[in-house]
Amino acid sequence: MEIMSQKFSTVDWASGANIYEVNIRQYTKEGSFAAFAKHLPRLKEMGVAIIWLMPITPISVKGRLGDLGSYYACSSYTSINPEFGSLKDFKQLVKEVHQFGMKIIIDWVANHTGLDHQWTFEHPDWFVKDAQGNFTEINGWQDVIDLDFTVPAMRQSMIKAMQYWVREADIDGFRCDMAHLVPLDFWIDARTKCDEAKPLFWLAECDESNYHQAFDVSYAWNWMHATEKHARADASLHDIRNQLHAYTQYPQGAIKLYFTSNHDENSWNGTEFEKYGLCSKAWAVFSATWAGMPLVYSGQELPNTKRLQFFNKDEIEWKQPLLLHGFYKSLLQLRKNSRAIQYGETFILPSENSNELFAFLRKKEAEVVLVILNISTKNNLSIQVNHEWLSGEFISLFSELTFPLLPGEKFELMAGEYLVYRKK
Image (spheres, rainbow, N blue to C red):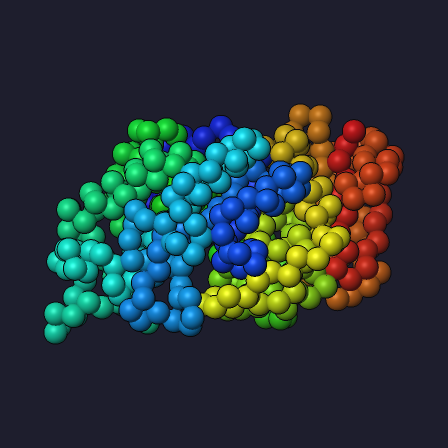
């Protein structure tokens, strides 16, 4: 497939940023915008830059799964889910997010709607039909039906609905669900028209390079699947490095989103601890220090160790202290403040333990960051770093102690251990 260049410029505030995904239903006992807003000071202090809300639209009743249904089976594109509050409540949340110096994006589900979406009554010709003329869905989901993107009027109404949230509520962008199931030319048209109100941030849930013609950031799904296979001993770190190399062939300016959890992974495939065991934090360190953008899911700072139910109420059990608040704060602040992490060259370091240790240097001008990860259950693994960039006084990110480091320095790591050093 021919790789095209990006057609749009990424907003300046995305540089060095991160995304925090919010599951409003499960975040608080109330499950409302107003209750979530009480967490904003804490999230700001942790270093969160962009807040992504899972869909805020009402959920279809027909075909609903569980007690509350899926966020991703909407009944209207321009209304608020009453469980969360009112339009006034949502606009107040956006205002407070902005007052804290953060940005807010909303989840947009363009490929399909719920079974009783208002368009099923008003414009039934806007949907894909089966041979019998019934609404249908081709991906195996029970509670949604597919929209027909060959219908120009549907496309334009969809874009008007997206523009509504930008103009009415002053949101800062969109996370687009299953973006690759929707024609790319629709997204290009949508972005062109929505960005007229103000420059927006666009995140695609897909792992296809050509979608960067419309999007700033896309999911690193293939990387995540490779890391899961490595944790099960079904893949090697060499396979992961190959996938990372493939991402370097993306269009200039394209950003990949790295994560150890999100709403789908947590609910359906397990927590980061189920998937990665001892190495969950090491992979989180990778996500924040590699070239790209890190994502943190609701409750990872706790840490949340349970799978949250998807269709029913299943509140996150916030307990003090939040044991990983400081861990994520250190990583998110490093990404924000380090030009080496944001823009630097990357050099992967060789190791005798090449399937257990993942080590690399990031460098921009005089700044150097060293990252060493033991992605295994083996203890006392060592690596000698012979590279000219390793020279000078370095601060440990997590201990804040200073060490003089020179080429030839040797490091030893326990299972799942991670080391990050930044040159003073």
